[in-house]
Length: 401
Image (cartoon, rainbow, N blue to C red; front, side, top):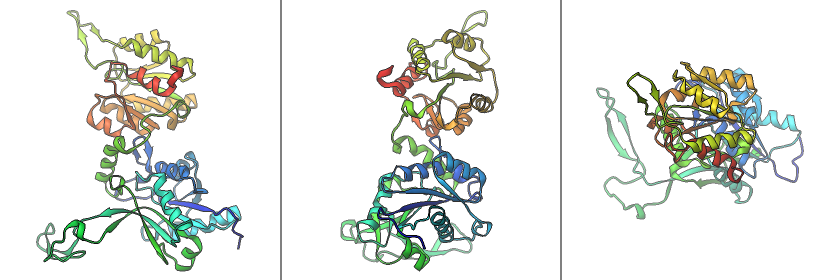
């Protein structure tokens, strides 16, 4: 066995199989521009007391995503990657591998699930501290719960009806007031911390003195079905922080044209010529971004020559008149050698959504379609054509603008 070092080692393990029946590719599904796996890794890496973050997987694409976010990878053997394999078996395999790799024992094992998109670093700190400082042998994130739970059986003729229902956590004949009932907690499934040796000895995550660490109910959400993923995307603009990146997080800015740099209206004269209005402040924003060394690209499906004319005036490259903007975006950033996770893409309509899925910072304008705002990682206060680019440049450059 390896010796434990004086500074206690906290190893976070995120199991992430490649196969998912409910939501294909679930662990790589994006919420506010970041994969579920990436969000879990980022939360663990931000937590002060976590020593290292490890992703256990059987899939090459998940391994690559884990490394992009700064996690170590343990490739899981096939027998531990089936539908019937337990989380505990994957945790034990990852723990053995990491201890052999680093030559030191883990003091606290942290089990984090990528299916909880709003897990915060302070939640992780809470369960780890409960074990390291609070005397707990194992601890888990929990949400305060005040519901009345019932148990019954499905009616054979109508599975939408539950019959022979009985109260589980209450006496149905006496409806006690909420303040008179004992406090209860709902396991969130987001994070568990446990003494590593105790986990080895017992073979499961709950043993000894178990502590429930309360977390905010608003952030309690597990992604099991497609509807859960849509809920997460809708909630992300409200729950994620920060709303906008800094210059240090961005290597390029890609801009839609109609509805982003314009207000999505077109003036047509008697000869059929189209005219649009742009905001002078956007020109200043683009100029300052370029001066700061940030590449800027206009990407539009619009065929009107006004798009190219605007790009020429601004002195930036343009790709327009294309059906698949996501295909062109991928081709562009691969040719430029720019990581998609470090691209800010601003758009307003549903044809921008495939591009949102590719980049690390999808940004919607204030008057974008509802589904676009839901999928965005940040939303501007400016409406399309009213200084959106200037606002984005201000967020990125701050006083440097």
